Image (cartoon, rainbow, N blue to C red; front, side):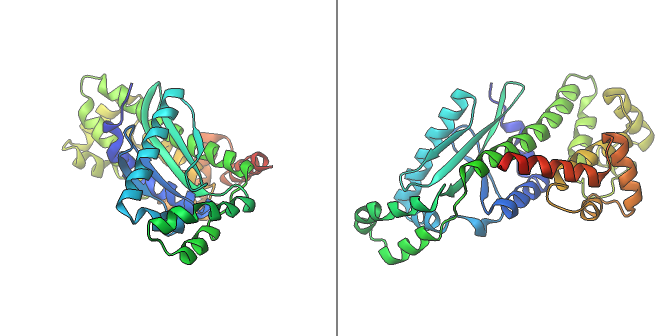
Length: 298
């Protein structure tokens, strides 16, 4: 079952963009988010990390269409198999397609690349010279761009896939669960809008009064309705959402940076909340997760 449309706004949101930007800083790669037909939903991450050779190739319309056709085919294969596609394009670059499937629903595909898995692969350039010459490309320039392309070892490739799958599937699983609850409740609309509001403002302080105003309800009635429909108060939901977000941010930033990013001016308060909902202090959690990622890379 395909369920892309209802998530599009969230996939374009600033929160998802921040995750992709962190990924770019960690790996030097960009992320595109496509639907099952290869249509772009969002282009996140630091775009200056885009492979320079591929950017030059796609500047030519027929080449851009050829790349899009290849991407579409690989997305279809990955969705059919229900697993990631790691493939080599016609110019010998490795590309990755990661289908994000939550509760048997296809949400989107994450696309990242293009890179070599070893320096030796750069020697393939000479085999492409006849084609590039025929298409009118400057061979010396294209050679320089080709050889400047990033190399990522196979073991790091597995860590990249795990990182993206865990982050996006957990993120969308949480969102999907809330949406399912609200869509099957009698008065779900106001609460669903409030949840969307919270997810888009995790970097801010989120007063109950602001959320109630956003859904055109009085604070008293809104808080009662929210608890009836979700089983938790609005404040608790905000806190849990921020703590879940903190788990992601701690992979790339310090405890202090994470606390400030989530709108907590008091580090002690943030630490107490994090320990309450996870059982660990932010520092210990951060160290354990980073160690786990390092072990996967070995």
